[in-house]
Length: 507
Image (cartoon, rainbow, N blue to C red; front, side, top):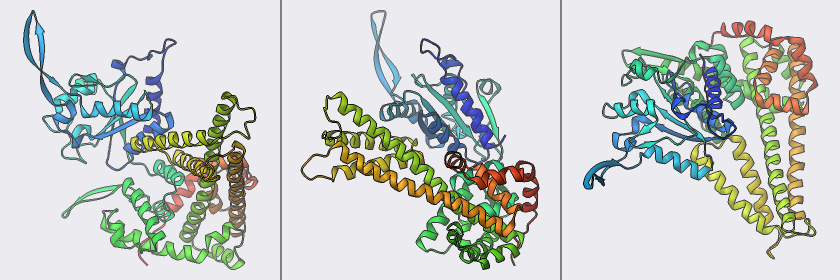
């Protein structure tokens, strides 16, 4: 199965494992909750989907790579304890708590999550001295004398032996206690993630054209030659940062992430061409509705590979504006909830006029609590982009509130006024995103009509949860009209086949 199917399978298992009866006990006893074993090639996103699942289920998350552990760190250190048996005192060997089990308890205390996911990577690559303890853990969820706390689900991952020579197989008795999920690299599944997360449009459109370059592992006379989903994702991130800093993206940089010389060279050539298209087409002017007729004519006359690149630029810029608007809207909703809680606290304290009441003590208390929450979730890997922005925007609002009056007080109405300013800024951002959507559709209509390019635009918006969230909340008449007219689900495979036939060879 692909990585997104694996994610859904694991998420379904987590929901079942977390289910409780009317008395608050787990419906499936802990000893019968089989650990998940996620088996797949390196760099396909196994760790990433586990972080996403923890964020989506709002549970704790602790991650360890087992290749970094010795028998002592996993089991705990031995010590001599005194025990009395039949009135005779004996010296008995016991063990301190495992570092891994202790990390789970630390996460529970730091985040306040009594339930969570313990993710152990490279589980089939542990040292020989640790292997017996590891097999015991998989069967009984115990390291030494210490057990994984109830409510914490064990998920493990590993690479097949063909990708990692230190990997070893388990016996039937162990496999029969695991929930095994085999994952294969799949471009279509990764592409949906890439569109939503804003992977660099040069990477996305290159792989649209050269799909067999998405994942490749080969053995050559010079050693291993490979390119993975992780490599493309990391290359995307560094390309964006280099562009922001005005640093050239060249073949030497690409080769540090795409460790296949031929593919690195071909992408580098494509990136240069893509950059030229970006400079020529001035995408910001298109989204502002200011594209002149010359740009429209060039697009109309362009070869199909240039059109694919152009649509990648348009959908990337458009997706960024829509995503920012959705995240800002969620941040404002979060801040509103915190202010509503402050208002309720003032009312509970007996304030006769809540708007005039001094809110500064509550503002300071909320600031400290929210900062602790942000720090704990960042440390545990639970801080999604959505939460990060919500916390930081609310902290910025509270910080402004504390600076309003040097006399040492601020009324609740003053805090509300500051919040109203953020709402006004949000309204402007939503209006800008709505206009950009309309202008993008108008440009594609003028340049390409109901052609394949319109299909690309509609498909990418439909695959992007931020795009659909924005359109469902704020509407876009052109999207709905073209979505129905194109029947893009029926035509999508034809377009993919055509894109895949393009050749990006140099020159």
